[in-house]
Image (cartoon, rainbow, N blue to C red; front, side):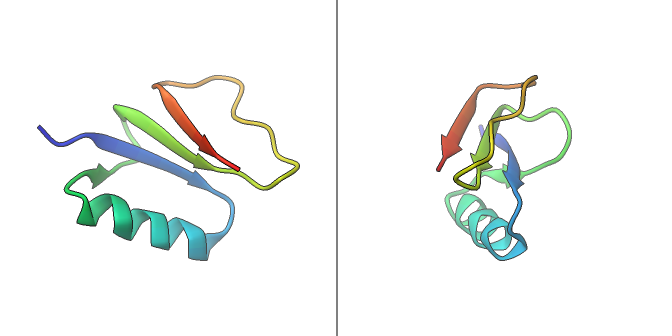
Length: 59
């Protein structure tokens, strides 16, 4: 079973790079009904207040 991963990244270059890594690992990138969130945040940013799935936060 492939996990559905929602990416949250403010930098479009980082978003594309993370999407490529996620897909290369055999998972799918989605905006709807994710199994997990991968958040790449700026140093001064806070994680989203409401999460619709378990999250891994990169800082």
